[in-house]
Amino acid sequence: KAGRRPLVAGNWKMNGLRSSVSVVEAVRNGLTPAIHDAVDVLICPPSTLISSCVAATYGSPIAIGGQNLHAKPSGAFTGSISAEMLADLGASYVIVGHSERRAYHYETDDGVHAKALGARRAGLCGIICVGETRDEREEGRTLDIVRAQLAIGVPKGATAADTVIAYEPVWAIGTGLTPTPTDVAEVHASLREMLGRLIGPEAEKVRILYGGSVKPSNARELMAVENVDGALVGGASLVADDFLGIVNAYA
Ligand code: PEP
Image 1 (tube, rainbow, N blue to C red):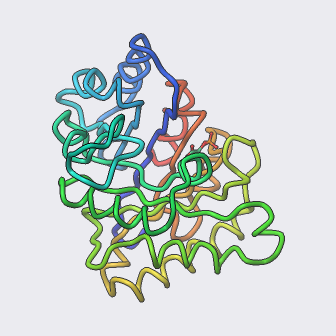
Image 2 (image 1 turned 30 degrees about the vertical axis):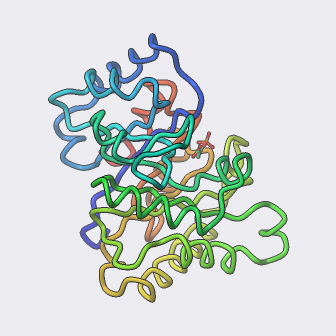
């Protein structure tokens, strides 16, 4: 769409032991050159598996990313991982401000902004997540919420090379519920317009993913929506055939 190359990204969340690298191998084996021509594929395993997933995808176009980062490059932040550390392992993307981080780790929009800057500093592409809760949607506040999250989260001068946006309605994550294509189209159009205010014409090049209960059975319909440039996939990315089924929506 408008020359934007789609991206299908898997977020494994806190799932996967060393044996799970076999899922990455199965995805690698299931992707044809024709699919790679059409779509970028990214897998974000837990940090503990980044090295082995990078090794398992060596020589293939599959990218590996982190699920979170600390905004600073290094220092006395026990248990945290910086963008530089992720890049050093061979990661090329990092998810920033996932709703589970916002809900369980008190991440704020300002924190998301700082982390997005950290990602850029280390040469990673940050996937900045925005999305409304069910209450916010029922109160009719969806567009206000996601536009504000975007306005604060996206750093000045963000480009398509260092930034991807993911619209993930909180009520659709892991629930099997999805917004209608019309609702998705409305939010993505509004995000694109807001991006234009923030970064000018570059907004047309930035990919905006949809995330929340994407499955092989609904991927084609959701991915066909205007301004939807790919998917951020949680649960279904843990099963190679399901993830491949979603990637194939672009084949
Ligand atoms: C996610 O974790 O970003 C997500 C969209 O999860 P799920 O696909 O399981 O709803």
